[in-house]
Each structure stands twice: as C-alpha cells, then as structure tokens.
Image (cartoon, rainbow, N blue to C red):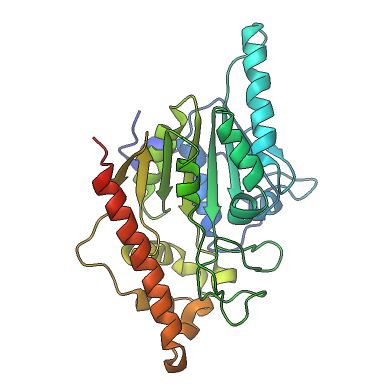
Length: 305
C-alpha cells in the first residue's frame, strides 16, 4: 500500500529518541523514514558503522524492532542466513516469515561488505539492502571510501579525492536484482514508497539513500535537508529506480541548480571554488554531467512502462 500522507507513518518509529547520533545526522533521518515505511514483522541487520554506534552503546539500545549487529564485512551474509533459517522454520510450522532489511553505510556497502552483498544478490535471497550514503567512513574518522566524490577532502585525501564515485546501483542492477533505486530524505514520500515497493519482491532489492553528514561534510547541522535537496536539484545525486531492468527517473528538472551552490555549502568541497582549483571544479562538474547523461540514455533505451 502506497504512502500518500505523512500522518500514515505516525506511531511507526523503529528507533527510540535519545540515541547519540550527531545533530543533523542525515543517516538517522533516512533510517527513521525506512523503518516507518516498513510493514512488520521484519528484522534489521546492520554492519559496524555510525548507525550501530549511535543506537547501541552498552548497556542501552535505541532499537524498538528486532536488530542484529554484525561485523563490517558480513551484514549481507548474516542476513542471508537469517532469511534462509526463517524459511525452514516456516516450512516446519515453527515460525512465520519476516522481511529482512539490511541497513549499512557506504563503507560497509561500497567497499568492505561488497563481496557479501554480491553473494547475497547472486543467491537471490529475499532481502532489502539499504545503504545510507554519507560518502566516507564517518564513524572512524572521516576517511575516504569508494562513495566519496571526486575532489572531496577527507582525512585520507586532504588535497581532494582523485577517483570518481563508484556507481553502486549499476553494480547491483547487473546482478539481476528486480528492484534498485535511489532516494533522498527530503523526498520522504518517494523514499517511503520505494521501501514498500522494494519489500514487495521475494528477491534481493537495493535502496541507495544520500545522507549528508554535518561533521564529515563540514556544514551547520540545520542544513542537512537543504544539502540533500541541493544534491538532487544539481543532479549530483539523481533520483531514479530500476525495475526489472527498466529505468524511471523520478525527479526531473529542466533547469538544474548550479553545482557551485552545492559545492559552496560544504567545506569538504568549497576549495574547488578557488581560482587555482578551477580545473578540479570542472572535473567534478564533468563527472556529474557524464553520469546524468548516461542515466538519460539508459532511461531512453530501457524505459519503464
């Protein structure tokens, strides 16, 4: 059932207030929306990362739903085992099926956990994998990840990252997943309905959510939703879905906002605006334009019905 009004999500919090996430944490906003959209019963699996640290400091927990914390690299493998075990119990009449939701950051998804993620998708386990993407290893000290955009400063790329961001959605589409999509917390209706659509498949599905980080991106916490909105409106983070190999772009604008607005709003990229770094800004723009152009070509060649 599609979400049409915000009040339909009231009273469905999967995480209690009082967790220790930073003010303005984009990941926590995104995760709250995911859990409000999910229909119980479900089990959440999380690798090590910001989400695990801020919700489970011993002896406390902020989780109101069944939740498993596992190692950085094996969340999708553990979720696969849970899904398989529940199937067996259901066949034996000793339990009922639960939806499995894996929620991991970009480090545990793009990098360290990619092998387990690939295996779960290849084996066709029925689970939704959600990546909250704050574009670096924020929990361990803001080190670069494969999700860090070109030009961005981190503690391990103090002069700016030289490699482009990994296209994780295309990787998982290539695994034959029936549903992969991107989302942003400022588009809550789009995000929550994509969660419900993804969970409707008896197959591995993927949701990639942009999650601005005040500490790692270096901006005021009150600007998190503005940054998420700018990422979409500048086409830095396109909003689209791929269903059974067919592409649908969910947010289109004939006049995108200037990329300079997005860059200027966060100190990790602001150095690109210096005159001596003009070539780096152009490289950043080129990477955005190339990805957007490629997405348009895919949507034209393989349009959703």
